[in-house]
Each structure stands twice: as structure tokens, then as C-alpha cells.
Length: 111
Length: 111
Image (cartoon, rainbow over all chains, first blue to last red; front, side, top):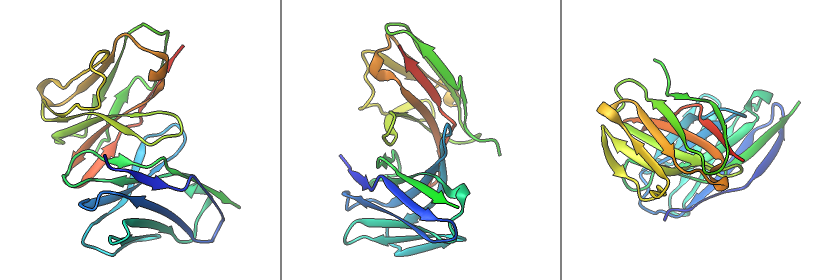
């Protein structure tokens, strides 16, 4: 089945940019997603990108997609302490159905 | 609009007991999912419904797990009998178009 890999931890200082990376294996994936999970909560949809796009910007969030390398990244500009959470990359596969998730990246923002 | 609702939020049971979780998706969302999230991992799909029909239950341990979606709205997920390895967060999600929204989850502890 589809495999999604993420680095487990990232620490940044408040005000810096954060870049969270993800690789996936399904070359026919149509949509790729980024979700945020805070302690004790469900997954919050942050943004997603269609596979024929290279980049998508949404306020402080920038998603970059390299379809050739099957690499997705999420850049958070001006990272705040409230951005501390686990970030999940989700692969929507070739049909609009289930999502395949990595193990998540724990982002810690230091004041 | 109201988000995906789940109850209970927490449940502690002993192994071999049974337990049921309830989900109310966002109004009008035809597609509903149940995911299992084990500590330190990303969510993994258990079952997907389209209206009141099952689309994908290939990862559901059918000897002990069952799920239904009466009238294509609310859904229940049941485990009987529970095992220690069922300790996890059970997340319900519903989808509109390309966007999948998650509920807060039910944290199950099996002792």
C-alpha cells in the first residue's frame, strides 16, 4: 500500500520559518494534505494541494510539491508558539477516498 | 457549521469487554470514515462509508470490530471483545469534495 514518511521532530525559534518535509510512494496520488494535531484533539485540515500544482500559498503556509521526487513540504512563516503541534502529511491516493498518513512531525517552537 | 461530533471522548474498559463509539458527521457529508490512531503513529483507516453503504472495510478486524451507518448519517463503531492492543484514539471523519474533516476522537484504554 501507499507509504508516507516524515521526520519525527523539528524545533525552531519563535519568529523563524519552519519547514516540514514528507515523502510518499504513490505516483498516481491526486491530492496531498497537511493536517495539524494538538494534544487531545483531532486532526485539523490546514491545506492541501492538487498533484498538477507545484506550489500553493495560504497566508503563513506555503506548500511545495515535487511530483517527480514525490516530495511535499510545508513552510510556516513567522512561526509562533501556538504552532507547536504534530503535523501530518496525508496522501489521498489515486481516488478520492481514504487518506494515508505518515507518523507525523512534532514541531516545537521555542520563545 | 458544526464540526464532526464524537462521543464518548474517553473510555476505559477491561480486556474482553465490549465498547461502542458514536459519530455524527458534518451535515450533508455523504462519506464517513473511521480511523484508528495508535500512540506515536498516524491514523489508519478502519472503514469507509458512502451514505449507508460500506466502500472499504479491508483493514477492519471483522472478528471483533463492527460498524454501521444507519440512514446514512450517524455511525457507530463497536469492539467486542476488546484486546489490549485496541488501546488507541478512534477518529471519525467526514468528507465534502476534496476536504476531509476529523472529529476530536475517542481515546480508548483497554486494561
